[in-house]
Image: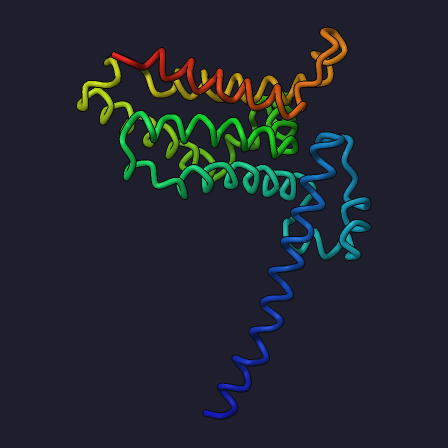
Length: 217
């Protein structure tokens, strides 16, 4: 019994170390892939960032493409988990929709690596997402969430009927994504910094009000 307990006690720190190593590799990979894309990123650089070895990275992720796919899954999991944690089904429909719009806007603004990773994957025709065993299911969840929210709003008489949840998802995410993905070009062309706190607050409010105005019955 004592030997068994000792074995468990010995395994726990090793497991925590392995999880932390994997976490560190993923963080470094996200920074590298979002900055340089899949083709430009170097596994040597990721290893150097984490003070580990290429061999260790391949042990955890199999290949450079495997690491990229895992990093992409991690980024999508971040926004989906954030949405889930809002517990929107417990809020009145209009308040829940406003919370979802604001959270989506904030997530994009605060995670430019996510925006860049999605842009990279679109360059590759979403082939890594297509091969993922979990990404489609995870991302289907937000459409289900949106559908329930729309249905509750229609039942309460505050949202109009006939709104496609995917179209609404594109509307909300399109604005949130575009202002981050094109911040630098828009800044040069129009001489305005979209990261300015006052402008960010104004755009956040504008998007929320626009979505609610569109949905009201």
